[in-house]
Length: 150
Image (cartoon, rainbow, N blue to C red; front, side, top):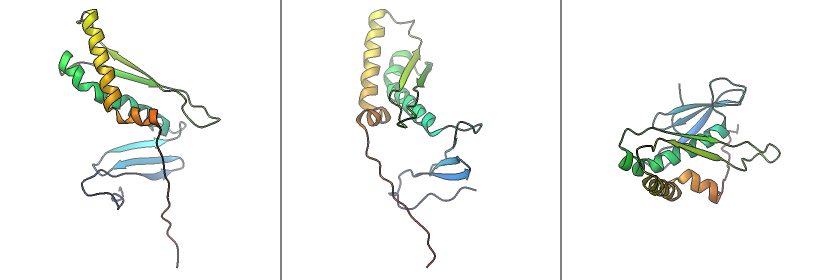
């Protein structure tokens, strides 16, 4: 059974946490009831943290482009965003992440396709928080709450 959401979050906001499930295995949780299994590449059925980072980027691009694409293509359009990028293990970073947005735009003429793709790129550049954060960099802090015996 999952532990309760950690304390300290503003009322009404979603809290996120991970709980250890075994050696190099965690379950990511949200206060909205979502779960994701996380672990190392050697653990079957889990995402690595780096894979989740890439998926978050692709999902953010897709969600950011949803309105202009659905407005032009209809609500039932198909899209797949593939994302890749090799880790630099010496420095433990992903120096480059590559997204490929797969869309069927065969119903549009060349000028309409170009206009739509410019609009989609602008939407992603403007509102994809994950992509904007990765491009800008972000300050990350870490603190500890330690149980001690008095």
